[in-house]
Image (cartoon, rainbow, N blue to C red):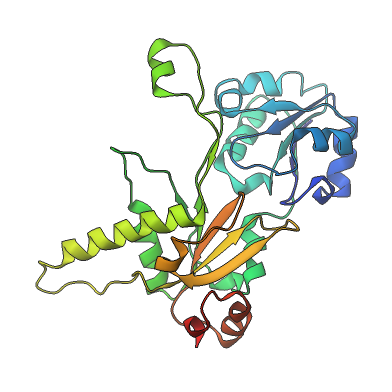
Length: 284
């Protein structure tokens, strides 16, 4: 049997009783380490579970999946995922690979940012399509996610923005030399995400200046946004402010997420968000 087990968002104790019991009887236990992270670290997980964990990075999951699945027709193998198993398409692909090999699979669900985001008071059924904001570099600045944000706003929906992380990413130089060297881990902050959004907003506004009938700007520097950090942890932090102000916010260590609320908040949403305001007039 091949198990994919969600670990939740906070610390080792967030795992379900069902998940913990499965881990204790598995032959091998892998910890996926690149779509998300737990701040407690691998050692504390091993101490709590009473098991050694095999770290599964991007290269192993995407290129050596057969190694993970080896023996799962006769043994129990566990693959641990931060949040919920279906929070990333990579895990869906791994499950399909197992089924192609005739390996029985089982999923153990847990909390993820996709539902825990309700901690800020915005109602989950008012959220539209979730988007991912990737890191930019000097030559690669994709902005297609912005159109999805605008589409959500047009339909009166909030947008959850998942922010990029880079863990064990090979350097360009090492790829050219065929000798793997890795960049230091990076985790996008809400201030970095806000900066990229502000640049997109400025570019879109400039491009619309020459139009005879310019499209109404759906997002601007004064738009209300919500920043979240370390959701599910004791050090969780939430701030509601303008997009411009969010660029200057320091919410501390990762992981961060950003929400673009729709402009027509429900009164209960508005009341709940007020406790997180950076400036009192934002939700008045």
